[in-house]
Amino acid sequence: MRPIYLLFLAIFTMSIGFGIMTPAVSLYSVLSFGVNEWELGILGALTSVPYAIAPAFFGRHSDRIGRKPLVFAGAFIYGWVALAYIITPSFIFLAILRILEGICFSLVWPASEAWVGDLSNSGDRGRCLGNYSVAWSSGYMLGPFLLGIIVTYTNVAYSFIMAASLVLASVPLLLKVKASVKKTPELGATGAVGGGFATAAALFAMVVWGISQLAYFFLLPAYTLGIGFPAAYAGYLIGLVTLFRTVVFVAYPRLVERLKGLMLPIGALLIAVSMLMTWAAMDIAFFALASCLLGIAFGMIYAFSLGHMLDRPAKGLYAGLFESSIGIGQIVGPLTMGYVGFAISPSSPYLAMGMLGAASAAAISGILVIAKRRAP
Image (cartoon, rainbow, N blue to C red):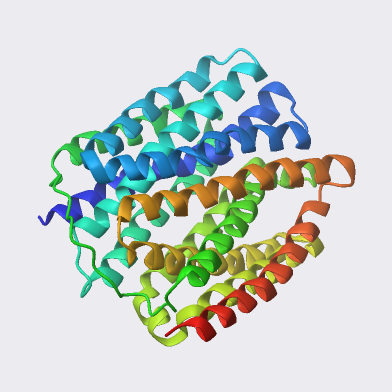
């Protein structure tokens, strides 16, 4: 088996565990500790406090020492952090574990993305990025569905055991992947307009992505419980988001060829539409449709932005900047939207995120127009 496919398999396996964890921690916090929306927002943001800074550092470090040690360390530590949730006695310990999750993610994601760049070349990078994105997104898709099954038949604590087992199962696979790092920069698989403005547009889009993604994933379980839906429904709705995100990743090479930089403003506009639909939703079918559109939006923004970053030199550094921009968004999103939900109403964060998506679509379009005009 080619080394890159072993890496995809390892990423898929650990991502199932990661996909279980975010809604599981949210449900566990509500059911076991009775936290409110503001406290949920704090917990959601804590993972992103280290994630706003550490990925750029670890990504640059991976350019020097290689990708394998960092991905291995992140996965191994995360497995034990997931198990520790079972014996957490208080909100303070929940907060500490969330911070540790952020450190583990900072080790795993920039190095694994740069690793894909090392194991591919400019001719097949678009296809490899699509396969990599499918690997992690399909894992995140299965995770919430598994959580829904677990909480239907047992209780949420068992989800932490399942998540830890899956993440630790990826470690032996990582050890078999070729560890060499390519030193020669390669350019050109995304069709992006070059230059700093295009990179700024991609990073800004990922901040918006981070705000919307974690606020939605972390606040939705409490919202759906509050309006009378079974606990499992939150897992299924988040699973739909990840399902349609994965579909976009499968189609990424064809989409980027046809749409190029338009993927960013279209994705931001779809965030606006889906969040406004969630705010107005009255039944599960409407929620489900909004989740599908949100998954398409997340897939378009993430795939294009990552492709642009890995077309830059110093892949580890640019992958780290990519992930740090997500981290910034994931601090802002849960904190601000959690407070909005606490202070106004549980549905109001989705109205706010809809307005943010619309404004972001306009801003990203403007940045890309400037980038195109300044291109040689």
